Image (cartoon, rainbow, N blue to C red; front, side, top):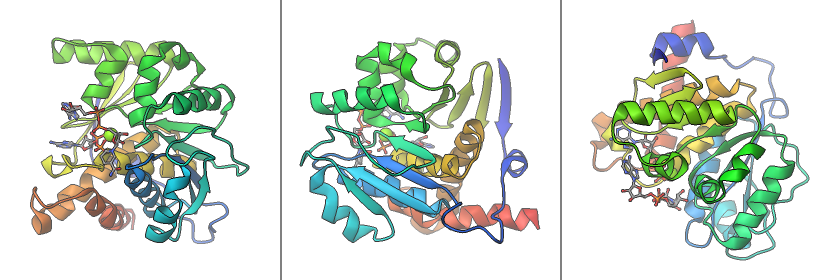
Length: 284
Ligand SMILES: NC(=O)C1=CN([C@@H]2O[C@H](COP(=O)(O)OP(=O)(O)OC[C@H]3O[C@@H](n4cnc5c(N)ncnc54)[C@H](O)[C@@H]3O)[C@@H](O)[C@H]2O)[C@@H](O)CC1
Ligand SMILES: Nc1ncnc2c1ncn2[C@@H]1O[C@H](COP(=O)(O)OP(=O)(O)O)[C@@H](O)[C@H]1O
Ligand SMILES: [Mg+2]
């Protein structure tokens, strides 16, 4: 195992400042496939976080019932709807995004599982899988071999357990996750306090974040942020590392204003700009 601590210096080596002459057409298009009846908020959080992390365009693919919710709450985001009202049942789109984030709030209806399977069989675009995307994979482990090399998975501890089985010690958790990452050639964002990013034998430990992040939708926001960085042509490992670092940094920045208790997932999104600025100041 190779252990690497991720601090600001490590991020600055990977961070690419925005080109003065860029435009929205080349700044990356992220597609967020998420949401179900009662959990359209997860799609909103993820899509808004993707936009606020710098990609030029964001499209949300959601069940029909979420159409007005997403359009009204984030007018900058484009929306595609499924034929089903309450859940995703057929993932088809004509746009060509550079990266896709799938799973937040998506639910695990049979129709959604079938649509996800169909999608994995044909998808060739860089991918981040979270939440119900992970839960569906846990129930259908043979589908893991459909994932392209360096697909990013972002499990919290319970989702990780569903994927790799129970562990008794931290050591066992790491060795099982490393073996899983190697077997399927995946990047595993092992969310926690702190979060570790696992790429085969290499374990990156994040240095930002605090308990304020223990709040609903916090992971949905992270999925949007990593997808956005992937869409902006960061390598998968860099997108995962920078996304986790900035996500944690928002909570460190906001803490003096919100305290642990009143920090909510929208506060992560609100502070992404300030988190980026700490990097800009250090590249001057
Ligand atoms: N506003 C929204 O629409 C929201 C939608 N959400 C979605 O709701 C669905 C269900 O997600 P959940 O994660 O709640 O459900 P899960 O059943 O996957 O996870 C909840 C369980 O995991 C355990 N757990 C979670 N984090 C842990 C940690 N750090 N350490 C130890 N145990 C931990 C909890 O004790 C609980 O038993 C997902 O699709 C998610 O994206 C949530 O993100 C909440 C907000
Ligand atoms: N005590 C904590 N300290 C630091 N980070 C935390 C803590 N609790 C949760 N987090 C972070 O918050 C996020 C929670 O993600 P997740 O459980 O998927 O939330 P949700 O599904 O509600 O969106 C992860 O990035 C995790 O690392
Ligand atoms: Mg989650």
